Amino acid sequence: MPRSRHTPGVGWLSSTCEECERIRALIEQLEAIEREVACVDPGRRDKAVEQVASLKGQLLDVLSDVLASGDGAMRRAAAYGLSKLQDLHSVPLLVAALGDSDETVRGWVVEALAACSGSLVVGPLVRALADQSVYVYYSACNALKAIRADDVWPALEEHLQSPEATVRKRIAKLLGDMGEYKAVPRLVSLTRDSDPGVRYEAVEALRKIGDSRAVDALIGCLNDESHEVRCGAVQALRWAGDLRAVEPLVAVCVENEELRLLAIQALREIAGDEAISPVVHALRQSRELVRATATEILGTSQRSKRAGVS
Image (cartoon, rainbow, N blue to C red; front, side, top):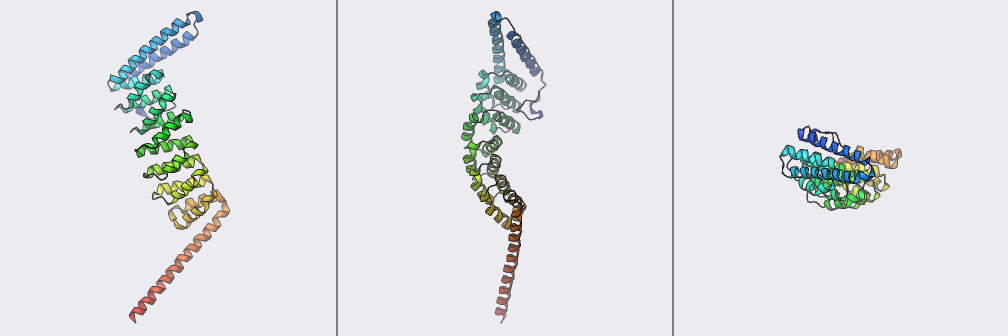
């Protein structure tokens, strides 16, 4: 199969079966006839158009029947054919086929839905984001990116409440890739999700969107129990460039050795090179305070031991 604008370059959708070749040939012939009909004398065109529509309808019926009841190879070929016909009448059957046991069938079904476009396919494509196959998910994700954001957002918002962490995580990532500003409040809520993977994708999405409404939530994520979330929060604050992040990032520099370098880079990005000197000074003071405190504790301990001996 030639690569489409929706599919990654992987072998899961490659199809050289004879059935697919026949279907491809039929559809190409049908398209050629449609082009020829467009050049026919207007007086005879209506009848020709009716005949072409009849042929297309018959092919659609055959492919629909095979998709519903054929064996694996035939279902794959039928799904492929429907992806080329781009007919909205096939949408209900395609939606049902999203539950097919064959990964390749589901992949072609997503392709077919994407080719149909329109509001009818948004819901099914959003549901396909939950597919166990990463390639089916990837195809659905790319298909949704190609649809007008205002048409996609309501369905994505609804599924952000999914009980499945994988779905919430994938939708958060998609919203970040789309740069969907409407999603910022919902993504902020997801930074407190019970699943660390969801929290990370929410932070990443907020970084990509770059909305100042998220700064306080990102600052809160600096103390997240997940290392990945904490790193993501530092990077997101770096991209945000908001001065509210300066004090929390200085605290990270002083208190968190594993994130210190990232935090220093973020401070440089936010406040300029001159921000580094005060941080270095604070670190030096912190070390001196540690040494002084340790010395005091050791001195107290030794005095206590001597007092006990005497």
